Length: 111
Image (cartoon, rainbow, N blue to C red; front, top):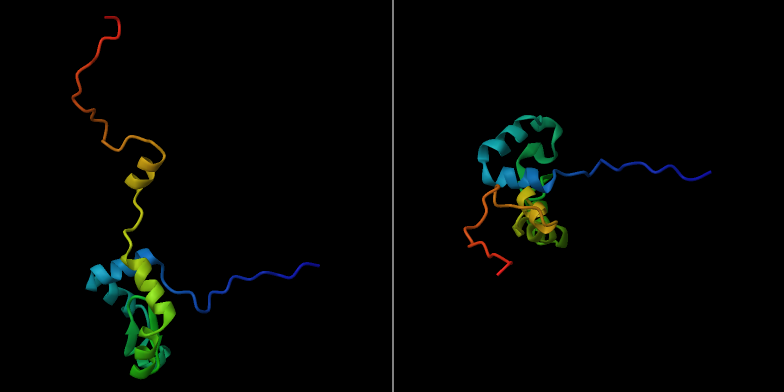
């Protein structure tokens, strides 16, 4: 009998698109924080890393986290330009000019 594979969601953090929205809009971040009870969070929700979307027990733990490899890796990924639908269509060769063709002169091949 094969072992049962379970999805580990205990340490699951927010996705990169959600974190980008948090960074760009303080309103988005405040709405997310409002969904959490401070009593249930480590350190009563005072020490939060926005880029990694994690709470920490103390300021010391947060500073140590920011010096770590996982935090720096996440920062590097967040600095990259996010993929867009327009870019995906350009990669597969679909038109991205919204149906407008360039004004090139037509060449008659029968001359």
